Image (cartoon, rainbow, N blue to C red; front, side, top):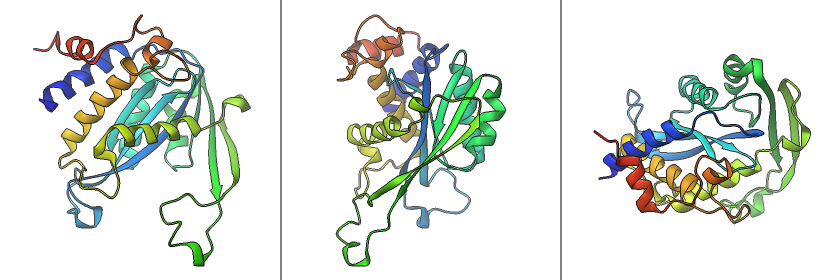
Length: 240
């Protein structure tokens, strides 16, 4: 059942998330393990161990424009950025973290219509005597550094806080992303199907508290909030 609905949701997102017009995108990666811990994964098996979900979030509308899960490497980064490029329409401002492959790949696919900045958040190292109790808490925030990589990005839109908050939403509503638990995905294709179902439910069914509507309504992709039943109907009605 997950495979059927997940694959249908992938097709639904691919069909509806087109010609997106938005002011700015924020991009980040979200870690999860699949099958086993990375240390126990065979070196030849790219579908087990650490997997990263790349997310592109429209800052103003909170819409997940694009997503992709795979290893955190150049190949998967390019697949993700290509997908972003074909979904957004017009000039776009993008903010990412300092992941090394981003600048060259983003410029390759979007340079003619791109304003791009890299934001790095700096944290202090906790003193040794409090390290144990702070192990699962953020270190003290020390500041940010910003580097302009393309175009002329507007300073008030250079931010990754919204997509980082989106990572929390993904972990909260999808047990497969929970850390320190046995709820992780056992296979990569089921992990991707569960993510596709979440993304469609988030974009089309979940009313965002700060906007009073769903992200899809905010982008005028739909005219109303969908129920889960309507989402499943829309996703599967053209399935062969």
